[in-house]
Picture 1 (cartoon, rainbow, N blue to C red):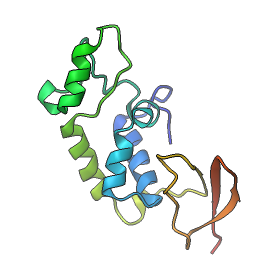
Picture 2 (picture 1 turned 135 degrees about the horizontal axis):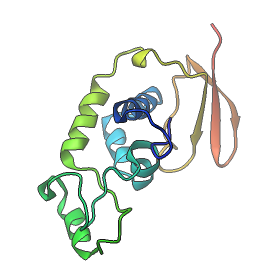
Picture 3 (picture 1 turned 90 degrees about the vertical axis):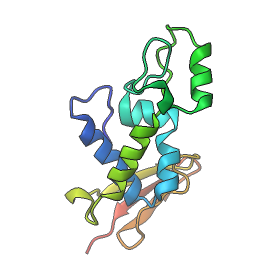
Amino acid sequence: MPDPFAMVIPDAEIEDRLLIFLKMNGADRNSTMRILRERAVLVFFLSCNKYQASPAHVFAPLEEYSEPVRKRMRRLSPFDSWIVALPRSEARRLLLKYDGLDANLGGRRLDVIVLGRGFLDGRLAPDPDAFREVYSNRAFRVYERRLP
């Protein structure tokens, strides 16, 4: 998955890669939404600071955010610029995109997958018919594509 801070590829490609990765590793709609709302995912894997939600800037109109997010924004300084939140309309758009992914995942092929054991990816795993676990420790798991 690309790092949105250092990449010059379009947002659509970054979104596709993240959503394909989630689908490929067994994330259903609910877990996908939970993962997409996590700050670490928003900043490091989806948008960098695109979804900033502070008194200085918001991506969408305030009514697009939950009341807890709006309440948090009211307490922030305009200098708190790395506070991010996914607006409802963007969440819906990303879920529709996730739903529309085709069975071959856009023609992408991964040969190695590394998944952590944390709350974001601890329950994810690739299809056991396509991948086998080749290494595991307390921090992460490594899978390789099974040969035909």
